[in-house]
Image (cartoon, rainbow, N blue to C red; front, side):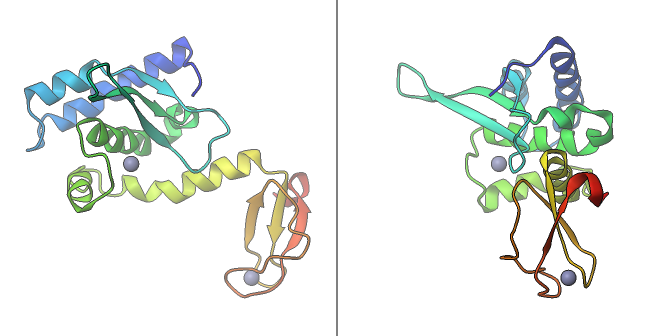
Length: 176
Ligand SMILES: [Zn+2]
Ligand SMILES: [Zn+2]
């Protein structure tokens, strides 16, 4: 977990406002749920996170009850380019925060209520963009031209998942 700066906090608050505006029209969200979500602490993940785009952190209170400590979003989600996906990720975390802790059928049903149905499809491209941000190598296929950003060399040990050709290591500054 990293501490959000002032600009990130402002952006997080703005996203919260917009997500709650949508959520208040959803059947499972009542006044007390909104009140909980309105005062949840928000924060940012470490910049280096690639797989996790958002997280809801819990802690055990003195009486043994699990309470939400913070909801963190990936800092890159706070850029305007990812606006639609950022709202979807925050919505996803807010469902967790309301008590659906695992990704079970009930959870997925609630998640599917988000009106912007295309937003979730940005997940893989966000992961790809984050990996590319950190990558020092592209594993490149000489047959079908697929490229896979990675932090380490593959040394010929990996095959293209599309055509099974062994992948070549290309330094990132040459790979764009
Ligand atoms: Zn989740
Ligand atoms: Zn290939």
